[in-house]
Length: 226
Image (cartoon, rainbow, N blue to C red):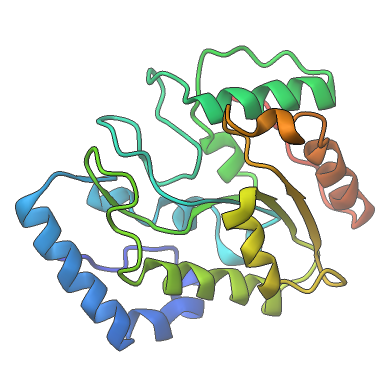
């Protein structure tokens, strides 16, 4: 299988040096070998889905995950999101609960498809864009982190006024790339059941995000899931 950069043109322009790098060539070879031997997620045409749904110049918010979901039918290229009809993962259940509490909404726990967010400018980016079936973290440290760090740095350096929602120690570690005087950086514990009660619940990141966007004359995010 050939992994080609089927990616939005605005991102291709920004990330072209990454696609042409030695590390990405090695990553590409690794992925070809992996797919010859194992089932991997997401499907090839969804690897860059986050970039396709949210062009570089349209990004308002970044929500950073670590790995794609590794069970059948779950991963479709957007962090924390699952396709319609797939059981909502526990972390996303807690995200929806916090949105409902923060914004006084009543989003039902019937769909975990966050494409509506991505299409409004929420970059739902995993640090690692692929994974071997049933093996969490199996594609870490193969080059994806260099690629997605480059994307974060490009946004941090070439854009201004973006909201970065960094949940959990891994995501928070990316704050080093972001100038807090140029962007809004909000941090909290991860929304997983293991840590949500340590400060994710009650963080009110969604109302803070929308207030910041509106202060800049931008439309707020409709956090509903439709």
